[in-house]
Image 1 (spheres, rainbow, N blue to C red):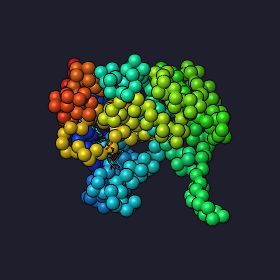
Image 2: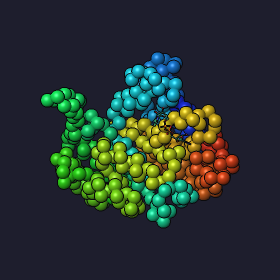
Image 3: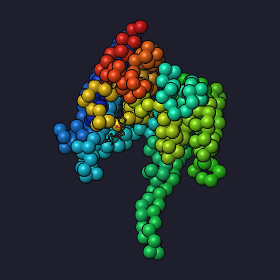
Image 4: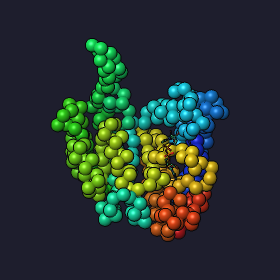
Length: 359
Ligand code: NAD
């Protein structure tokens, strides 16, 4: 039996993870897989109850489990707290403690939602890309860093550094993912200017030799940003370093439309993963049963694929979501103006997906 740690967090986190858990449990059980769920606190909820945004025993529990399914953290109640007592510290800590070095963000257009994008629907129909971003190295973590006063002028410094081991392990994640998809990796870099990118090109080429069945393209980051809005369908798996990935994953995600639809996975060694919707805790709609649970439900599908090795369960969940959208059901964030009255709530949307599993 695989143990899943549930960390609902704050705001709409508990509402959307409740639906994701129901769907995950039912979808696994239909395929003969039993799961054990343990629910724990993170973020503001943990600060209130335990005085820390993430307790040590929760970290230990997560380490001894198959995967973590998380809602969201934060909210106005804790906005004025000192830096070390802020809800997002809990999130940063669990990512670090679990050694999650690969961030996977799919950008998929559900045909029924093609009109939600700001791009013309003929440009986005059929988009199915996956951004694989390195998460623990690069400019955000490199030393030396800091500010100084030099010759009477304020100066600031950050360091971009990667070694070949860090590059090879994230490259393998991208090539493995491509094998389960359309077998094409686009490596995004700035090798015309940066030595670090030149090393990435070298190491990605070396890794590619072990995946002769996967096609590899190297793409400069500036032209990639343009291609992503001009012809997003050309991309399958996009592999890149931390800073480029931070920007391009948001660009790719927004091409598809709604924040309430975007799942993510952060992976470490040996199948350990943390799965969470891209959106935050949405305090403006918390507790009203109007949040869209599909990003959390699609995050649960990623959990099946990457931490349970249950691709068929992941496919079942995605098909059920597609069927519910095709049938015209929408939460308020997806409803077209004038139809918001007819929108379904968070629990109802969860129930529809659950029913969709048994179509
Ligand atoms: P947000 O994503 O919470 O909300 C932005 C807007 O999108 C809001 O209008 C919200 O109502 C709407 N929205 C978000 N998710 C939705 C869903 N599932 N269904 C329907 N509508 C949805 O971002 P924000 O308002 O900038 O931040 C709110 C809080 O969340 C802050 O405390 C922030 O720090 C935190 N946050 C947490 C995470 C995380 O836990 N990973 C990520 C981003 C923001």
